[in-house]
Image 1 (cartoon, one colour):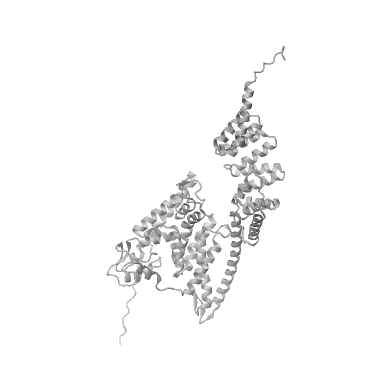
Image 2 (tube, one colour):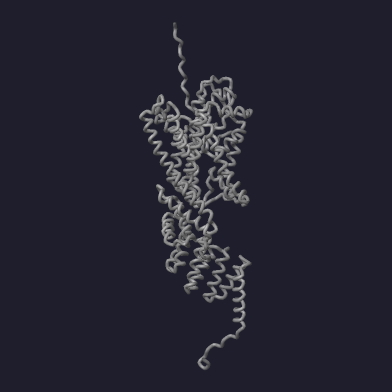
Length: 597
């Protein structure tokens, strides 16, 4: 009996589109470098052309270059499909580079297909774009007034530091790709991708198929967007998955040239749902475990130690959720592998499985510790946010520290206690915690604790000008005039555009009998803050004490121009004007001579 002749499997040809896309993505990074270089050389440049900058519209009503770019990219996606993600996103380029490097190391990341995690990008998009406006409306604050800011001198203000940025790239690149598969961050984390995916559903431009398709599957094997291309074109004559990022690798590698990018009818809702929900990798119980772990990890990591930004928290939450699912499956499944390493077989943990389980237990302990730190930091931050008006009084040199009600005093004490626990438990300092504690201690009248916390915050650069002002005001209240003068001068150096340092320094100098120095300080402050009626009034008082009648009158007039209801300024101006009139009515003195001394 003759054996059938097996046809050799045709080799998947290399994608020409991949090389073109590499050139485009490299050019994008060159443009980013040029943008940064222009800022470094010129000192001012276009605001970051980055989709994340679009969130400033929801927070504070700011229209910037990032928002305009995001809107333009969304409109082009509506017309041409999800091209920006595949050809212009630097995070996608990072993921592609990570997948390529892992491939060189012999590791082809397996895609995790989750039905519930696919909703994360939409949920995060609502959180960053819709929730700030909804919160303002609920609190009856109204929508913010639109402002256009297209240039900036502080280019890096909205970005994390270099080491946090590098760690974010490591997590959202190699970590997410290794555990969740190629473009795992795009699929399960990116909030901007939610908008592009929605626009993709309305785009007539799609990957389509001709009758030449032989169903070889080369397209699916090559697709880095995790789309089952051969199944979708077979069932729907087009790619309907909104995760398709139009990389065009599938078109390039098709041996029969059966795939093409072109216009045509839109897929129906049933087709999109059928493509999304078929062949799930996980049971519904596993989906719930994965989703619950993701939510818990995100709220643990977001803002942890005051350092973890949104995108890094999303990427790390995806990794932790996968590892939590792995731990669950080590108990629930009879067999389990991890990236080719067999952990459990026939219901029995193998040595590698026991080692993996021990590592997961250690990770869970660290996770729980981070959750406790994050909880105390959150409670401290809530108490800090609730005393915004009292913080302004604590910084104002013209007003005494307010007397707190017993309930408010207890709340501040609890807030300080939460932040003290953050300092004791944390594996590293929590950014901003020392400055928050200093405000609590200032309002509670705990001078020694205030000095320790404020000096620690100054050393870390946390609200440095505020800390100098708190220390100055506290030293002044304790009669330490020289220390108060030194700290007011430090506050002026740190924040020359604020009025409080000039007010505190000028009033302290005037109270010490040095009215001439007080006028210099307050006039300097008035030059920095020309719209400050408080500075103008205090400058008028200082000039009056120094005997400069004309200078005092000019500054009281300026005070009333800025604040017509300022009665003390009006009374002082009337008194000085009357005095000047009386002085001018006196006869001039005769010059002294030898005969008439």
